[in-house]
Amino acid sequence: MDKSAALTGLIGTELPILLAPMAGASTPELAAAVSNAGGLGALGSAMMSAADLRRETEAVRALTNKSFNLNFFVHHEPDVAGYDAKPMQKALSGYFGELGLGEVPPPSVPAPAFNEEMLELLLELRPRVASFHFGLPSPAIVERLKDAGMAVIGSATTAAEARALESGGADAVIAQGHEAGGHRGTFLDHVDLGTVGTMALVPQVVDVVRVPVIAAGGIGDARGVAAAFMLGAAGVQLGTAYLACPEAKVHPVHRKALAEASDHSTVVTKIFSGRPARAIRNRLTEEMRWHEDAAAPFPAQRPMIAPLTSAGAKTGRPVIFGKPVKGDEQQVVRHRSDGVVDFAVIKNLVVDFVREHDQIVFAGDFQHFLQQRLVADAGSVPRHCVRLRHAWPS
Ligand SMILES: Cc1cc2nc3c(=O)[nH]c(=O)nc-3n(C[C@H](O)[C@H](O)[C@H](O)COP(=O)(O)O)c2cc1C
Image 1 (cartoon, protein in one colour):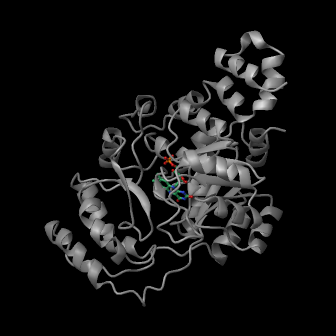
Image 2 (image 1 turned 90 degrees about the vertical axis):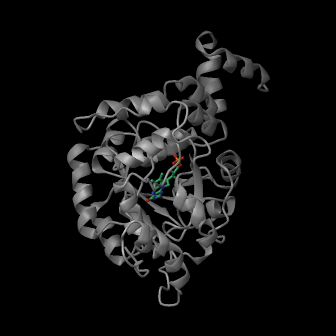
Image 3 (image 1 turned 30 degrees about the horizontal axis):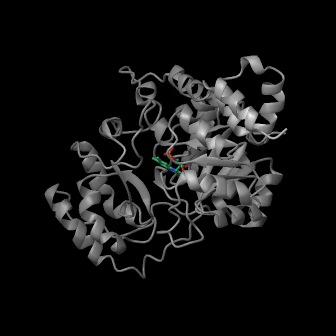
């Protein structure tokens, strides 16, 4: 069986394309639209209460009977009591003053890490896929999830992390390159490490694990998908590209910033949450660069800066996770002024990724493709594939 078929069999989709779970930006409409279009929809559930998670999962199920993914964070709970907040509060106070927001709040934990309550709920909700960021739950918990019929997936930012996920029971591994929008999933090394780019990371991960590898980070169109498959990935996970879809929960100010962003518009910063995350560069990220080491431990930094980020959106000064959608952005940015969910947009986005299907299949499973397509039907294959066939040892 080829790797992509193994992956789609595992996650229960037609296509090896996964919507990245994006805490804060996910919606049931986006998840269901991607699932209905043949990919794997997802809810970034990490910051949700149990009641919200239940409600949003029911909403996904009302919109699709296809597979979807629920995603959680498994970081260590921070020691907020042992953290001196004063330097960070001092660094942020000027902005709070400028926007009339009063005192900088103290650090606090806005949502717990994946815990017993969420585990029980997850076992009850039983999505087809449960995925985790910042590591995996214990092997015993992973077994329980698998026994309940879920496929378990985790994110790796190094080959060593991929190996650790596989030996911890992961059914598939996401190789998250440094290009990725949102948080780095790094969990073995210090959080500031794990900066390998997608192009270098994917083949190294493919070489060290037996489970299917899903490439993530900087993939935004069919060329990116083809490249990931060429590197040995069995599937791709895309986040930022989907932020442009009307179903994503993205403030209009942030949508504008994304649409206007270019290749050098992002930065990896700890100032929003306490862990490195790729965000759009702005005055805050630039000026706070010198205070990153004073950030509260993840995720306790978030409530300290939250009043600024929401005021930033209101006043038109965007503060956003993600990186620019490049190249084919016109194909994905199709806004509907009436606010109606436009499933056709998602469909087109997914279809666009598989438009060059021959190339992708070819790249994903060279030998299989040679046997099935090139040798059987050489007349119908793209020229570049035929050229490569000649280079393949007989
Ligand atoms: C806004 C945003 C939020 C994200 N939130 C999560 C999350 O909650 N859980 C997770 O596993 N990954 C999260 N990610 C990372 C994605 O899983 C994925 O690695 C990344 O989006 C891939 O890179 P790309 O954005 O260039 O496509 C997030 C990414 C973005 C852009």
